[in-house]
Length: 230
Length: 230
DNA sequence: ATTTCGTGTGTTATTTTTACGCACAAATAT
DNA sequence: ATATTTGTGCGTAAAAATAACACACGAAAT
Image (tube, rainbow over all chains, first blue to last red; front, side, top):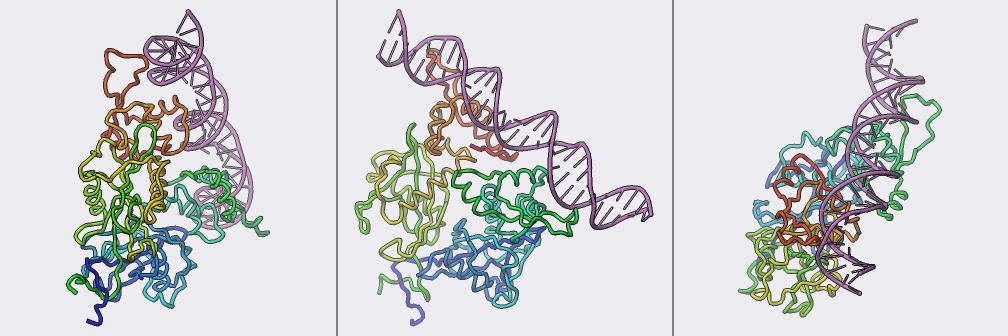
């Protein structure tokens, strides 16, 4: 009796928040997964996430669980869909508010809390716990849509990056190939990149220019109502 | 005791599903609202919606509540965001999975269940119950995004419509003005409109051509991976 | 009777997108 | 050592899409 203390006139579902965390290593898209230590789906991989508390929003819950389980702080998570299939959790009725976030690989420290957190290449993601396979598919499709109109790709890259790295990122997410020179011209014309350094003295002809994302310029352009379009 | 029969170890929020129903009368965008008969916010207007049952998904719940409260059947509702602010309902912790749907005005029968359901012009929507003002703003912004890439506008128009009506719809949603002739050319070139009838015999020069949405052609084009773009 | 207006059908100029050409020198292969 | 391949930077020309606008016709309004 003492452990069943929250009672309601009608049945209530449990509510969780989950986080699909995307990364990029210069070649392929990565996803951060947690290995489950308890039943159900013990041993299977799943997204970081957990039960929502009564004094936090779904987004706050997502951020808290993310930090607790992976050590990742202050990630900018974005809610994308709520999954409410009746039997998605074998224990009880659980609906989950799914989020995604884009992080730089360097932000995830190894060790500490995140003993069981691991980056997977998108191609080698195993079969996941619960309905997380479906959640991943939808997260990916939202990521594809969003990157066409907002420069979220920069959240995945290091502070400084080359044009080729940026193109690889877009190609990996959208699963297309761009002409290198057209991509170059288009990106520069947008005006949201700044050359990081005037190039080192020991400049090899094949050492590419490093760029940095110009967030101020983007904010300014966005206010004027321009769209990226890819 | 007998009326507090569902007990849990941890507190659970209530979960509801709400529906923002958009319509179009040929000139302005409309929203379907319900006047609340009970506290809280008694007398205020709100979106149709209600508590989710344990054997239905959020989407099923949205459709069921929509039919119960407005008589609207089989609307194609689309989930767009889950609102989970801690104090959005003064009674208890309630999170709501918000949906929107586009319907033809003719689909909503007057009378029956929907005694208190009423269409409002978007400009004259009163201050709403709960956080429904915020829900409406987000629904509108999603509608704007979506109509740029999917021909959902046709769900708002009658079976047969004129090019001017279609243009008015796009202009009302996107809050822009198009050149009439460019809009005409672009729409026809897309190939998703078919002329309804070869024009009546008593054809007045100012009786406009009636079109019909070509759903089959659109499905075919979409499969080939084409985007609308407006 | 004259003017205004809504519709259908264009054409032309401008902008954007796409498809490549080429030089340079470092890296690699022979 | 010499030749070939490769990654980078900077172009240009053709093609396609967009934007701007001209005009006729006749019903509706004045």
